[in-house]
Each structure stands twice: as structure tokens, then as C-alpha cells.
Length: 97
Image 1: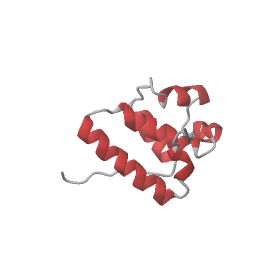
Image 2: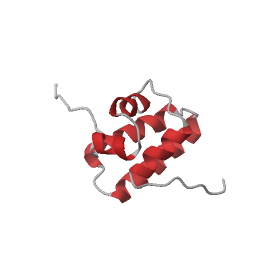
Image 3: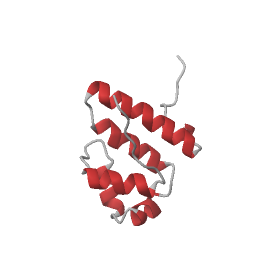
Image 4: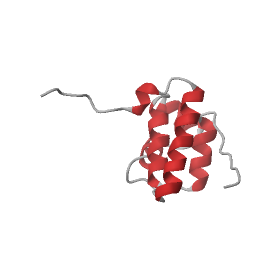
């Protein structure tokens, strides 16, 4: 039996373009399944590619609050999502369905 390491998307998100493309794919999945917690989880994955302490400061959140909001049990407000995405150097965009 071969042991495999668990897949960690954070290891593959090297550039801002990688991150944006992955979050777009996650958002499409969220739209298809209505599982909005998956988007918060995905932001948590992206946040792990950065310095969490600095990200928390940039988002004007506590480090613990950031971890909690982006955990599998987290339920961040839309305002928190906006703060985090801006602090990651991203912006949300919408297009006609």
C-alpha cells in the first residue's frame, strides 16, 4: 500500500493569478452547491499562503478572529470577507449569470 500525503491547495497557489483562478473555481462550486462555508475555507487556504499575522493586521482583525472566521466552523460576515479579500490584494467581481 502506498501512502500519499493529503492534498494541500496552498502548496500550489504561488502567484496572484493562481489564487484568483482557484477562488473563481471555488466560487463556481459554491454557486452549484450552495455551500458558502467552502468559500470561507478557500480564503483560509489562501491566507495560509501569506503571513497570517500581517493579514490579520491589514484586515484589522485579531489573528484569532481571522483563524476563527476562516475555519471550517467559521461563518464570516460579508464585511469580513471584503476586508480579507482586500488585504490579500484581491477584489470581488460580479458578472451576469
